[in-house]
Length: 141
Image (cartoon, rainbow, N blue to C red; front, side):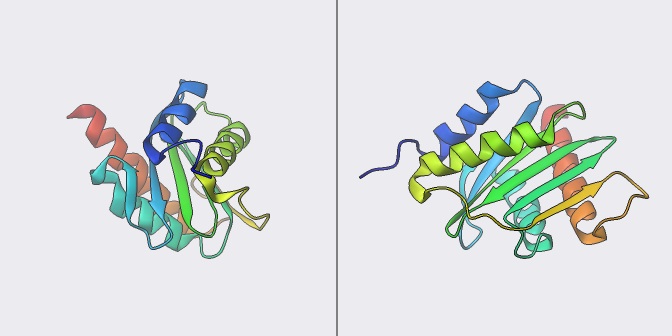
């Protein structure tokens, strides 16, 4: 049975659900870009690498929010404005990822970082900051 959505349509779906989603990407299991801006691919790969084996990622900073969900063969990442509700965005990403034909993302640990000076993984925080900056550069250009 073919997937219900293409990677590009999955991103459109997530953006339609929240005005706070500024940009997104879908990567395959090897980190190759399936949908989204090519300029964001390297930063999105770095974020997923920094997240280790976490099935979900949530990074909140004064500049914005980055959420990601991964299955065995894909990852969907959304970069949002600072007023986004991360739990809602992650749920939307889970639904979009499931509609790509990979079934539901596996339950697993979530990696999260909340703002500067807060406890969390510095590599994950740096990767999220780089991704937010890349989206801001795209918006300004």
